[in-house]
Amino acid sequence: MILESVNEVELLVGVLEIGAVIIFSLIIARNLGNRGIPQVLGLITAGVLIRGLTIAVGFPAAPTPEMIYLITTGALGFIGYNIGSHIDVYKLRDASWGLPLVLIGEALGAFFVVAILVNVLLQDFILSLLLGSIAMATAPAATSEVIREYNAQGSLSQTILFIVAFDDILAIIFFNIALSYAESTFSPSALTLLEIFFPIVIEVIGSLILGTVLAFALRPFHIEGVKASESAEYVFPSVLICISLAGLLHFSVILSCIVFGFALTTLARCENKSCVRGVERLASPLIALFFILVGYEMELNLLLTPIIFAILLYFLARAFGKSTGSYLAASISDMPKKVTRYLPISLISQAGVALGLAAFAYTRLFGLSPEASDIAIQLIDIIAVSVLIAEIIGPLLLKRALKGAKEIRDQIPEPAIENHTRS
Image (cartoon, rainbow, N blue to C red; front, top):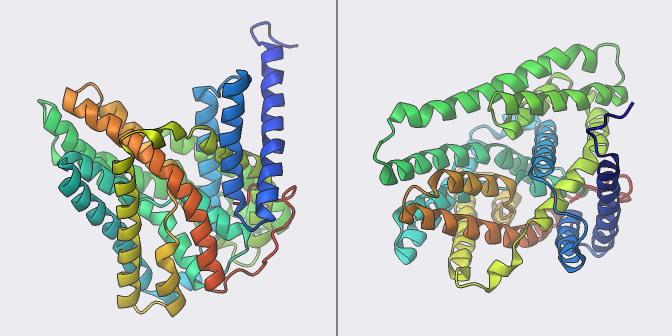
């Protein structure tokens, strides 16, 4: 029996809209994919077009905050699982200290170049710290999806997956420190070091524990008496549980799921590939909606405002910092030549984490003082448009890097009807 409080027509129309949006977007993504453009860019383009259509005709209604939250959180969780499940611990062991050094080099390179240039040219120390910390993050979604779309395998792919899995952690740590400093500057009550670092430590350690514990709890279903192709039926709802628990406990959803995927893959080294593909197929509609939503939420009109100078400054400084830092670190650590050569152009993408940090800073700073409100507005505008540029250029450069490194094993992507969330 349908409850009287449920608006059945509205609910069914919403389901109809979601189905139509996905099909429309897949058609665009597939056509662009046939022309050599990563399908994630096609899905984002479809989101931009859908927004234009909704403005033109006034229907359908914009997605609700609840829907945006569910799609974003769920997609990032499954993307995190995908990243973790493709990190090979045995290959990482062979790389020894090189990977952590490259991770630190590219992250700190972005931080210092952005922070210094923004402070010198815009004369705003707090804005420079906030932008510098956000610049450290690389979009795990678009990056990992491009690697998955082209079935890329090799030292460059493994290095990229390692970086996108962990540089968000560094970004979150630096950002929280910068935001706490900004709040203490504009607020009469200063925060202690314990108040700054304790929530960060709890979030990171809690995420690591949650992902690991769930992986061990699922091990009997994944290895003993269950075929690898069938174990996806157990893993998929387990990722949902990981996403929910991380959200409820205020842990990092994407980090928890990265650890879960990594731990589970390590425990089931020989049987995991079919399971990972099965989970990817089950989660593909949700991930497709995420990239469509990224395009839908983009504010293209900001490209026509005076703030475009600050946007271009941030984007170019971040790209230069990440490229220079990763190149120097890879050279010092004697990484393979193809990693040293192509990694600098592989880390340009930036999306969900950067937008989330900027939005969080906006909620914390706006209203503290006129100066704090100005910084909050500038921050959200700069990040929003730079993400647009990064999500257009990043996947194209990443594909070029993978092709140059000869790590694309399957030059012809599988049909979009089966793998429609591939970038």
